[in-house]
Length: 393
Image 1: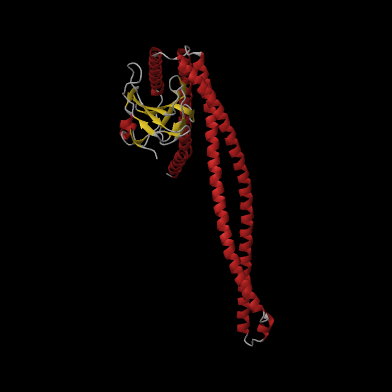
Image 2: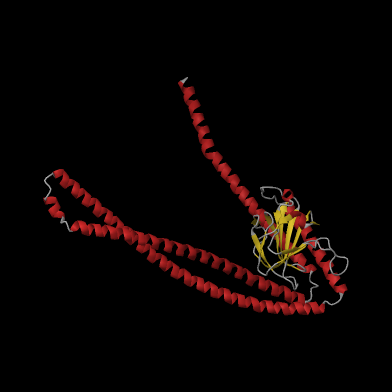
């Protein structure tokens, strides 16, 4: 019987060890496997998008030399604008740090004045008591208990004064350190502001070159027939791209979201500040071609935000739309942001609602600055005004 019980306990211990060690390892291996799978999916998506870009370049090989020059110019401006945007963010962060340090310095200076006043009062009290001759006070007392109490009071007083002096010294050291930090930060900020000025000058030069190219292009496309042909070609290219993107994305599971995109209808913010021109389904200026989205007029460099969370499906230059970002929101829904000055996200990046993904521009060979915005469901355009009701302030 004892032998059976011992064998039973041994099996229980082995089972415990199995669940204690093997299962966590199994869970860890499963987590690692999922992580690797997601990376493989992301790599596959980027390969598919890269193949699509090559196809688009082949299909757009009929672009004129002038159009190719404009594309190169706009991509160069985009790189410059991306650096400019980064520098502006760094300057904003430096200003925030500088403001915090100045606030801390002012607070420490106020505390220093308070502590100095307290210490001054203690020194005056010490001087007044000192005139009564500490030793004489002790010798004049007949009661040992009184003598002990006087000595304790003096000890307390000296300890308080010592603590006050330490506080003052600590504050003085903190103030010196903060002044040093402010000095270094101010110099860094000055350097960044100079860098920003240089980048702005470079941007102005590149924009002037691009403007000249666009003027030449507009002179080249004078007939309405040629304009109409270009519009139809651009429309077909975009539709073809979206359909191929949808096919490439179908095999990749989407991340869980707080709410399906379809349920956000009428609750979303417009992607950028500015006046919304509701052009959807209106006839364009030439031929029987309708607008498939809206234009948001805004200042060049204004941030472009996501209307909802999702995944960057495309982020590159596209004929007729310039620098464009396409976001997959799952369940067949996509949003498009075209004519940007620069793009700040890459294919495969997951983006949250309201995240900055680009800046407003006029890429794609257009003259006016503005964001072209579309919403699509299963590849077909949907009126953006039905989805976005809230204006950005």
